[in-house]
Length: 436
Ligand code: GDP
Ligand code: GDP
Image (spheres, rainbow, N blue to C red):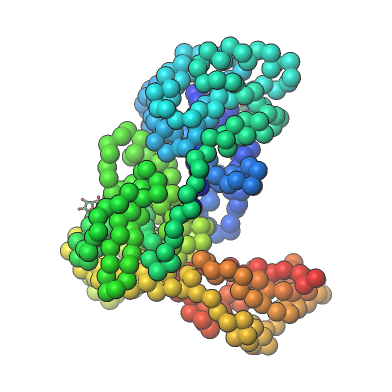
């Protein structure tokens, strides 16, 4: 089921980022070694009254040196295109400014639900002064204070009320959903075309569950797939679509709906920081990942070059050590046939459930072979392990004291589990829990 999307828009300095950070809070978890997790993230999960939704801080979408007005228009447009509900934020201390009116005009035309939030209303006396904001035409203004965390509950009630009724999406488990992510120009569209061109038994391009995503189903060797569209596929020519943050946002949306994510790298330009960041999002989301080195036709291809590039990938993407690497050329179609078998395998591993008794044998053997080192004179005891989830596979290990499970030991157990069951292509999670 797709989560609702809420966007915060407004001119600079009204407090958008402050509110964003407050609502998202510690959900921007810092995962060691994962470059995807950055504080400048503009898209994150938030929760209110048992409803989780995705929040966009459009203030993070910047268009280089463009004038303020152009920037604001683009930001409002992103909100209109992407969000189910828009929070229009103004500053209660400034009153209505010309820039607010500009934003209001654009939002007004969009017919999207808008909740008007008047920020920096830091004390109750100031609530008297917000009535002028009625004239913006979005109904009742909600006074809030980002600094003090006031009024956010009422504002969120109003936001959640506008969420569309959700139909339960029918998920057919036999269909493998995958998406392609990567920097602009790594060859995402070309690879999609080459995959569909070869294997085309296309029913039709059907509109996906979201108005802005196109899901393309196809079959190959009796397996059914759906390619989930990303930004690269249809270049709609809007000014903001070339911005890095926008492309990341689109990638995140595609990742969320995928089982398997193909993270593309351009062999011609080599690995760049942004590649790691983008791949990090797929890892963080717990999706199966395949690293695709595209444009392999531009590299003098021999065993040695491939080995060198592989080493380079491995040392740059340590957090993706489980991900297989495919070298191919979307342009010449060379080796593109190697891709779908990898997608199938990764998807099966992502959904794999192992037998509890065998799991426990593996863990106990591992323990016997390499007992956990003592921490401050205390020794980790493992009683029992069980798989609690799939997509990705997650294992709870019941222990005497979770703090004694050092991450290096967790890593060791993960490797033993991988060796025993073969989880290529998928992250797995190990959670130490105290036996009660
Ligand atoms: P953005 O440009 O809209 O993202 O605004 P920021 O979140 O960066 O905030 C701009 C400035 O306003 C910062 O100095 C914040 O500390 C301040 N600010 C944000 N929320 C409040 C608030 O509720 N009350 C007051 N007094 N200041 C605030
Ligand atoms: P996207 O922005 O990631 O969707 O990238 P495109 O598919 O639009 O490709 C960007 C450019 O790279 C285009 O000029 C493609 O022709 C070129 N390109 C894509 N795949 C390959 C490839 O395998 N080899 C070479 N040499 N060029 C490629």
